[in-house]
Length: 134
Image (spheres, rainbow, N blue to C red):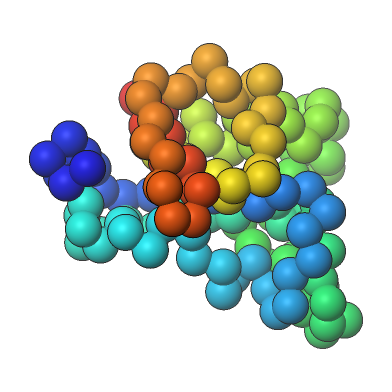
């Protein structure tokens, strides 16, 4: 993986399964523990901030501050919102996200699937690492 993706750096995205009950907040969910092996300057934005359930009431306030939630709220205010799946694809395009990490049971929406150019599955966690079209 390090040879194949050593050029990768910057912003990526992560997907958790819909309805996932997170004990704290998606801010603390770091998929891709192996990212440091690929590049030192990597960061992922969670694309499930609106369809992941929070176990603690106060963490619901945290989701309002997250980039994807703000992106969707802006689309709604501008009248351009179509669906969460479309917003996820729009977010990826707008921010030129180059990779996506999906948890084992997360479903990659059809709006994102055509963007995928390569994939690797982590045999231990079941996470899927996708390289996206530039």
